[in-house]
Length: 359
Image 1 (tube, rainbow, N blue to C red):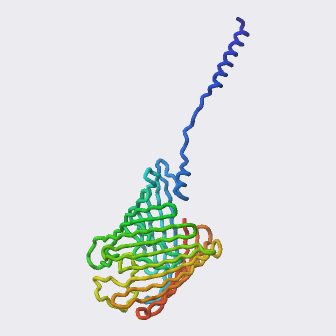
Image 2 (image 1 turned 90 degrees about the vertical axis):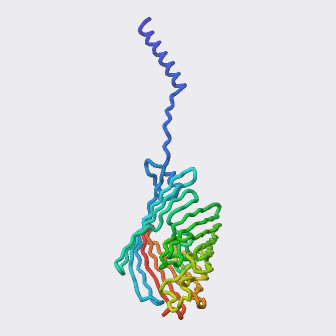
Image 3 (image 1 turned 45 degrees about the horizontal axis):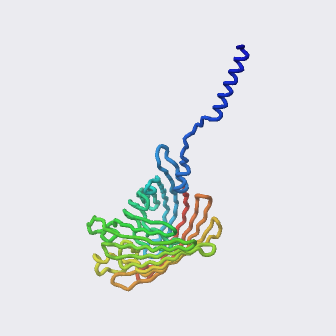
């Protein structure tokens, strides 16, 4: 055999082997990496993945500067400037039982009138699916458009709540630990929390929505009811609200020491004080431009005064809201209250100006 023949035979064998390998190639499959950006986006904008965990985190809040002023009523003419920083940290993890949630809302404030400052936890709670437990704002903290409506009493408790949401419907039931002062036991020496039961049913269909809130104070054995509706109307939206309380209770709108001063309680240990028995409110937000809106609002209230006839009064005002740039807004609110002459030295005027940076 010649060298030439050997070379040609080797080349043919190599070609045959190459053809066989080409017919059955080796495929290397790379592992698919999870897209954690998409996973966290499922929880909403702003969530980001924490490496080495299955948790998504969101950090937000705002910085608020505000100037308040008031005159009339039973208070001295005064003004004040104050600043608040709010930090909101929210974590979410997808589980077989639904989203596992943890939220902390921290507020820190400084006031110019007396140089005081305060830092406190506004909310701190956990959640799994529709279950929620901890310190959080109840349904009663929600209000109407504008800054006039006052249709609730206490709104922030240590609570356990279950919420069902689906197909435009919401239903929730909460057990609230009421502080003794919330039920009228400020100076009794009783440091045991009392039980409150609150709930909501509501719906939203297109531009129409309604919410019915109920709160029952088991210590005072009295309840409050509130109905709020919203309607898309013209270049804005209209909110209407109604509130009724069977008696003084933690969920009812009650009054402080500067209100209804010239009355005496016949049985102060049984009846804690004055409360709003009936109230009606409305607010309309007019979107003047994409950046500017005006919200006039009004409320009528019938206050229940122990040992005396009910006193009716009304309040009205307007909120001006302007977006300077995305994330920075300026607001101006002005309000007037036609107070009952028998209990107030003069009608009440108040207002505030606010700059707020949201992030």
